[in-house]
Length: 137
Image 1: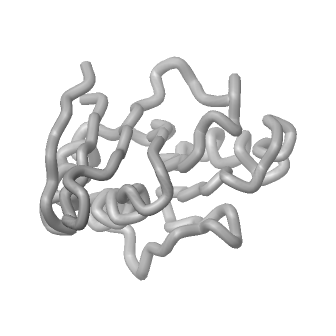
Image 2: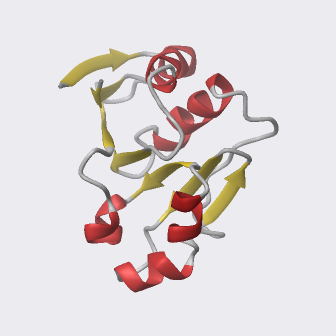
């Protein structure tokens, strides 16, 4: 069931991410959808913190995949096909039970499992930090 939330800060975004993290299990896929700058990486940082992932989490826009122990963060924006996603090690990450967080999941096509969690982001009020997030709990 999708629930829409308005957040005003990084801390509120992280709190929402922590609530989702508490429901995740090994092997889950989390799909992050939304415009550039809408909060996908900030949300992923909150997920990582809640999951106990050490180190700094940054956008994998240029490297495409970042492994953070039990969590894998993918930004598929620059990919063109499911074959490209498979070449990144998709099946290996899934086989080892990593929680996979995917930005631009439409690029993965049918590789996204039917039970994937979806989180949608969009900008709120103009000239503010407000973001709208629809989250699949």
